[in-house]
Amino acid sequence: MICRKLLHTLVFSSILLLLLAQTSCEKFSGSQTIPAYLKIDSIALTTDYSTQGTARHNIVDAWVYIDGNLIGTFQLPATFPVLAEGTHTLMVLAGVKKDGIATTRISFPFYQAITRTVNLVPDKILDLKTLSTTYSAKTKFMWKEDFDDVALTLDTMRGSTVKIQLTPSDSPLTYEGLHSAIAELDTVGATFAAVSHGTYTIPSSAAFLEMNFNVNATLEVGVYVTTYGIVNQIPIIYLNPTNNKWKKIYIDLTTTLNAYTGATKFRVYYYYKNTTGTHYTILLDNFKLLSF
Picture 1 (cartoon, helix red, strand yellow):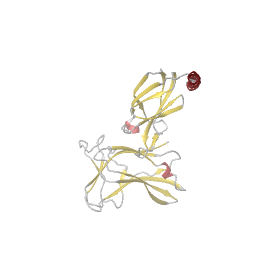
Picture 2 (picture 1 turned 60 degrees about the horizontal axis):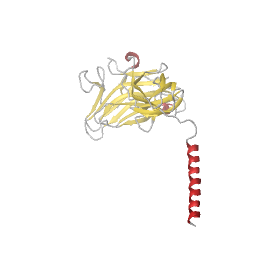
Picture 3 (picture 1 turned 90 degrees about the vertical axis):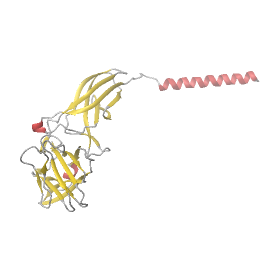
Picture 4 (picture 1 turned 180 degrees about the vertical axis):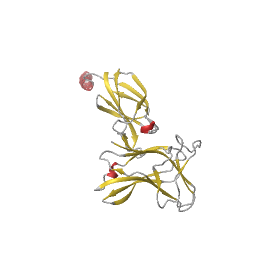
């Protein structure tokens, strides 16, 4: 009886081992690919200051393509695997937070794609260090204001009790260049209202507003859109206090500008009204209104 039980056990064990071996062969059948690795520390921006303005940016991601196929989007700095080896075409797009929101990350359409030929070696890291991009040749700078010229292209509006001032060039409040714009509101009812001097044709392509800001008030940014001779005031975003730090933002105007039937022209505005009597300071710099 013991021998019979032992025989049954051995047969069952042999069948089990055979099944496991078969399963393992199926799971690992075919060529096994060991990934290569890419490392990107950051993406820099270079500009021709006279025509494109500041090179200050807030590029936070790399959108990575190999031979035209999206590998993934990676927050910088990043080291990531690529299931390819040998010579391939690498394309990297610079990514930003649309409207300053971490959950709405996009590849910024106005930055030039970075392309290179790379040799990928399995289990090896290809260190690309800092890549560099610039504005696409198709980018149209509809409005550019750095507050360094004598004539400003940002106007105080009717109803504004506070005028736009310029910081001294040697002031710690100046962000870049000779001056930044400053508005200070000290009393209840004090109002800052400013609008772009120019009126712009609504583009058929994407439209973004870039800007640097340092505020301790919640600043409203929006557009005046003209439809059939009627001017519509449309808030787009409210910039939160920055804790005495300068920030860069990319504001998407595209959907708003195309939401009104018959809309042809627009202007950009900024607005804040003091309701508490607290001292508020609004600092602005490096406006860029972009389209294609």
